[in-house]
Length: 375
Image 1 (cartoon, helix red, strand yellow):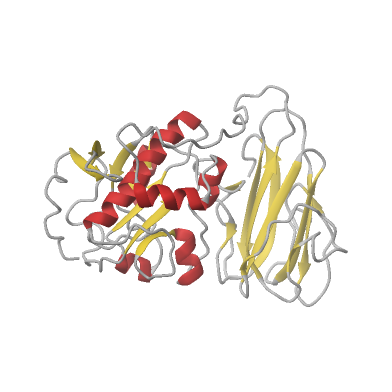
Image 2: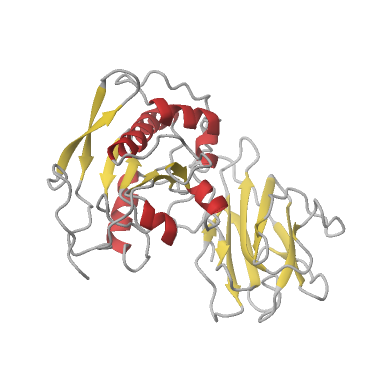
């Protein structure tokens, strides 16, 4: 791999200063960029970008930004994923990739056209989110201005600040970030677009997201046994017998080995669960909250005849009980072992956010609901 050219002035030290260009007037806010986890000159892509878009991401896991930066630094090659900046931990910025060179964050077109891609680390803490959000918005905006890119968010034009969701809808992929996470803290798409367009003053006091519900408790307080029942419909054939929780042998998972499936239902005896599937033909389908195999419109996830290759779910614990998650894993027709374990929709650091491999038919599924992984 060719060595990169020298990085932009001021970004070679272990910590440097980045000036945010903000709204009307000439105010600026200085923010320190941490380069402790930046890729070296012999790491990352050596390909320069066209300067057409700045891409806004969210990490999809509730983990410190520092941890995400460490992970991307360590696995940039083996995992094939990294971006230029991670924002979080109360408004801090961690650099991984080099500006102006391709990162691997949103597919070949996006990577080739984005001199800067930025991840927003996720937190349940509102005060921390406010600081992160202001920094994230100003960094998106100032990066666009620096490279002569419009500060309009998700416009119909092919130049501007683009969410990963826009890339999915207009180019390629299946991601919806950062909108789901922003919405969890009361930030709408329109407010996000307004904020990036105009920026924040140095005080950052013009952000006022609505509060989020109190985070679920992490320590055991009142744990109740939760049982999950689920079944897959074998493509071109029939509904298979339902499975309760998971186990060994043919009765310990839903599905038929080396066979494709097209519909799924899941139900729990306590709390509630929502779930959805990804199909080869349609991408991600809508979330489902009911479980009725006789209601193929609202009671199951999937479309008859369309092959499932991904599953995602999220379990909600009843109020006052110990926080529990849906832990689940799948296997495909093209592989002999289970894939990595998932926890809800990525809410637990270290676990995958959905099960499956796109393009490979899902042939079996296991689910367990607990406050820890039992696989």
